[in-house]
Amino acid sequence: MSRFQSGQPGAGDGLTAILGAGALGQLWAGYLALAPAGNTAARSRVGFVERPGTNPASLCYQLQTPQGQASEVSVSFLDPATDRPSLLLVTTKATDVLSALKATLPSLPEAVPLVLFQNGMGSQQAVAAQWPDRPVLAASTTEGANRPEPGLTVHAGRGQTWIGAMTPAAEPLLSQIVTLLGNTGLAVMPEPDIRARLWQKLIINAGINAFTALLDCPNGGILTAPFYLQWIDGVCKELHQVMIAEGLQSPGAGELRQKIEAVARSTATNTSSMRADVLRGRTTEIDYINGYVADRGKALNIATPVNQMLRQQVQQLSVTPGPSAT
Image 1 (cartoon, rainbow, N blue to C red):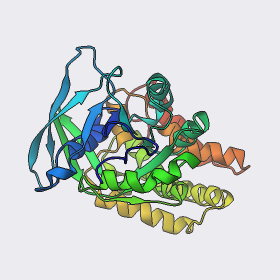
Image 2 (cartoon, helix red, strand yellow; image 1 turned 45 degrees about the horizontal axis):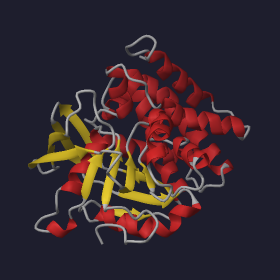
Image 3 (cartoon, rainbow, N blue to C red; image 1 turned 120 degrees about the vertical axis):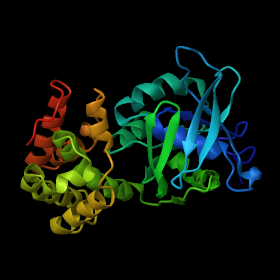
Image 4 (cartoon, rainbow, N blue to C red; image 1 turned 180 degrees about the vertical axis):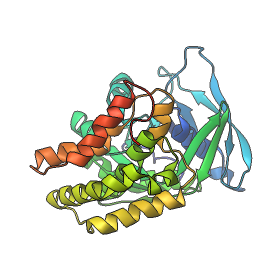
């Protein structure tokens, strides 16, 4: 199906709304609006929630596939007075998600499901706690997207997206949402244990992002840097201890390091989102990555000095821009 069935929770006018018009939001908007090869029935109505100060009717950009093919995309901005979304994809940064939803949700019926695409951990739980009666789902994705220049969004590499329920009201809708988003041609799968899946991505982000921001280097550049080599084992040891205390399965610290370094090598030329935020003078998501590990360690009475150190050093970058580690 390409929309929610009439009369079911979330039923609206078959419109998918996207809150967050950054690279990931534009990626999903483009794939929803463009039919996979020859399959026009798979197209979905889609619109962005935010309307910039210039008040345009739509956002127009080129979406470039991993194969280098580019397509024109035009996505309308929604009118809250007349548009009735059936689904809301939330692609804002973790630091902004609560404030953005507080501004958006009053105009949406409680039955409209929310799918959260934030990096790290903590923001998803905060949204579920704030709106426990709404259908809230979380997504963990390895799809890569960036905007190297105005008007161009690049799908840098195909990945996979897992979606799971964060509140009881979301559970009956999971299959329909996975089908809708999977109709884009992107790989989308249901995940019964989304918390464990989010932790798997957190491991990678905790072992790469802060180091790339502090060293001001692409992902592969951390692997031979003395600062990384000094601290990565401590990061992995703390991750392992916190995961075990959380009741999650975790390989040993050595295997966690292997997983991190395999991703750093396979994405060696990529710039992490945290490094990009620092370079552009934006707030990072460190509190939801290494900071989340440190916070959970404190709650569980587990010492996490390395993750806390990385958190503090990245926070300092927003005070005094530029690399602080050598």
